[in-house]
Image (cartoon, rainbow, N blue to C red; front, side):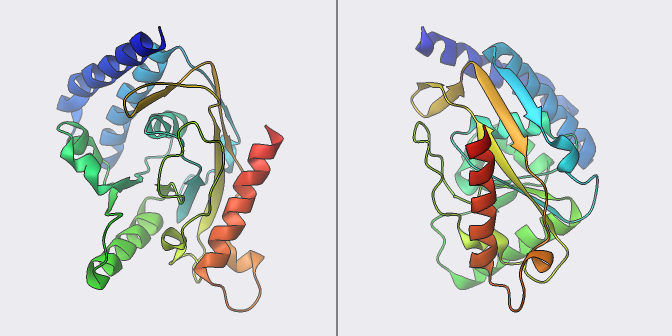
Amino acid sequence: MSSLRSKYVFLTFVYQMLKNKHKLNEDLINNYLACKAFCSKTIEASKINLVVEGKDNIPDSGPTLIASNHKSFFDILLLVTAIDRAMPFAAASELMNYPVLRDYIKGINCVLIDREETDFNNLKEELNNLDNAINNTGLILFPKGECSYNIDEIKEFKKGGFMKTTKRDITIIPTYIDSPKLDNIGSWYVPKGDVKITFGEGFIPKEVFNGRIMPSMVADYTRRKVLDLKNKV
């Protein structure tokens, strides 16, 4: 039964992407609304009971970084549905291999991250792209860098996404997605039952730390804040 449900949700996801693709154009807000349309319909098909708490903690504008735990690809659908502000996310570059999905990724100006990249110049360009997104539109980031699936542990946050947060007035929103049960077919994982997204109180690193601020300090502090949200669920 779980496998059939996952297949149905996946087919709904594909159908809704195709159905809304014609809406994509050069306007970020328009494209984000198109993304919200197929994401919310997919969640509706999944019969998830989605509860969102702390949405008011997300600024309406200004440099913003939403830093969340990450269990599966479905987290993207959940966050796009929950967040009203048009905001791209840092996306694994391999997602560009999927037809149609890549049109949405480009349409909302997602920042592509190659997790195998070692060339210094390319890494520098990725960091600059992250910085530009944070400052221009805000950015959704999964700092752990990979899905944990059915493992509930929140591993160390990688410092790369926080490199440019140490000197500017960037509001970081610790975020915890509580999706305790997952169905799957292959690598397609779908939450089931109750799912809760908690957007924690934002902080600006310059207002938290004294002296020289290192990206690793911000990453560790953000992770602790996400763990605090997890422990309150």
